[in-house]
Length: 423
Image (cartoon, rainbow, N blue to C red):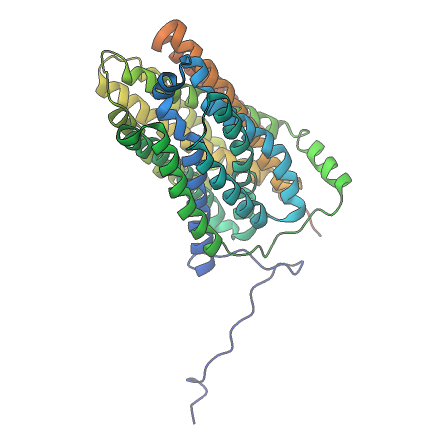
């Protein structure tokens, strides 16, 4: 007969908060690893599909006989569709749940990605890209909210940083893999290859993603509308939405125009070689979680302005003519951008939660303005390149980065919210 010390112990029930809801997944738990990996892979797939045309812009101008400014629409219409989707899917996720939106988003966007490989005309390509952008909105609409709800506060900031890192690697995969596929089989091979990669990730996410345990639906449409209006009453949230637009506008402007600069004299690089410059995105996959850890120690109010300064320095460094210095500037820019974005997005979620606003809606509004900035900055960058060359692009991206530095410094001096009194 086994002794009491050796007898099996009953499995403890999940910890619960004061209101009876289970606590979030803690460090070391299998659910934390599954949730982090699933959202990481979802970010990889979504952003590989979203930005795959970026490395193809010069080839698209040749294949369809359009101008550089028009070619950038292959990216901009998708980010505009994504921004619109955020306004719809964010509130829907507050009523229907996070996981169902995320899974539906991945499946529908993979189907549209496969269609892109066979579209016969430029106009139809833009239509499919706009629809795909709307479908892709499911991840940015719910990703941060899901992680903040399902993970313990002690690990949520780092997991959000890992999620942002997944988006960085996704953007890298779409561009670097796209460049090699374009050399091998043209732009259609690129579209088909990225669709296959995204399909594999979608299957993995479907299997790995833990179900929501802490989600509490907002039951009435009227309350949703009131909560949406409340998201516009906090000046710090409004400032962070503007920061999102400024940072992303400058970032996409640089990378959209960079493909044209690298394939033009004096560099005259092939698409596969030009695509290697996007390896700088690997730095973003490191800087975002590191910045998240620093924010947990020093608060976002200090980390975000510092990261924005780093981004501005990288933009200015790209003015240098030698290819090595140009690439170094992209590396510095990317490091600062993903650090600022990762921490700013978690700042939005925390601010909304402490202010008792709908986290899903606040995160969606942040992402909405983020992609508005991408759509506008990416399109204007093509025109800036066509009219003023690289100095005009730097004026554009440097101006938005400098404005973000000033705004984040101002936000750092605003009053912090205390945790709500639930007594």
